[in-house]
Length: 257
Length: 263
Image (cartoon, rainbow over all chains, first blue to last red; front, side):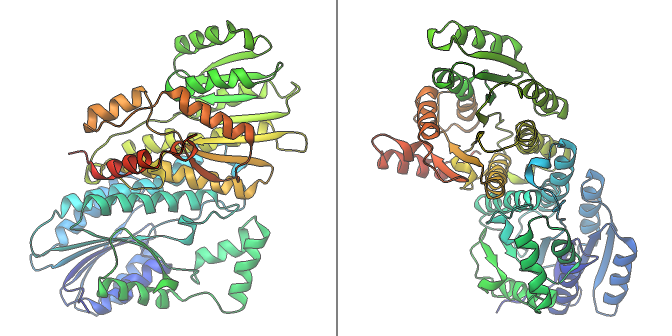
């Protein structure tokens, strides 16, 4: 079992849901002196999380920004660089920020390029650009482990009617990070699908999805207590990172662990 | 009604030639590209062919990387909804190579957004627009082709933009297929062809594949569409469709594709 060590963890979409859980759970397993850079649009939620994490022996920085802007990407990178200490052994970037898009509509309704572009900017481009910027900011050096996590989904592999934007974005991301893994054998790259989590996103899924069978499936899962807690899924993710045996670039689902 | 984007050159142009031989009299062939002169030249070539006398050929000069271009194209399509159309065939062929560069070089959001806009967003917006103009119904056959690539399925170093966009399109069309039983969706990987795009690939990466004439690949695609035997949402590859399935050639191509990197 590998320790994550003294780590610089950058977590996007950290204010709620799975991102928030990643921040809290990973902060329990890293060495004192670790640094967390938490990114989200909601300043209040981020600062509340920062307060919660302030008791531990950690440095916690927040960046309140919408990642689909160059300014935000640069801000996160700069904050991470400034917070970096020489004794950091591990840089981990958690690309978790993402949104569903409008799941109440079918593919043939997406005639607006502006809408599709805005979606891809936040869910695909920003992940690519942030990762590129972070990798440039923390280049390969002896004694520094580097890891990039993509929060993926079953939707990266399987088409879901009325979810065209979400599936398209997740498929693009999985491929993007596969290419990264192929290019950089010294990087650890993980496409992690966290499963059906009990979050705000899940609430939207079971109330807004146009496709009846899908909406019903998730509504049933919720009613029957079959949704996963963020903590349970995050524990699997941490296990994967600690064991560090996964093949870089692979897509691993919570149910595979 | 047959719509081909990126029709002015390469695979799109070859497909326009093939399609014009098979479209019945009374059909409309809409050729979309940025170059008015190349489109006009193609239109004249097609109209001079004996087999195309009953065919109406329109050219739409449009830049699909911007929403006006997509809207203008859909508007032209809408002009034909009163025609006696019993089959809509939309071929999403327009694409760009993008920068072939290491992942870390893609630090600029605008650059990546511009690439995805042309190669992903415009494809969805155009397909959606044409579907709205000709809603699938009994008596109206609908076929949609996504011009794909082996790189939709396989990651290649330095090709993050192209791979990601092709993977995105692949999934987009699988969702479309899952939503619309009345629409036959095909992702077709045309193989390495004698095109400007391949010239650019050779120039940028130094990799030289054995190239096939566009017409050969277009012929295979046309046969698949005419046979109409494929499962909607499937991905078919030029090499799978070889009349003599050239296993060695395919294996060679695949292993070369993964071995060579851009430096």
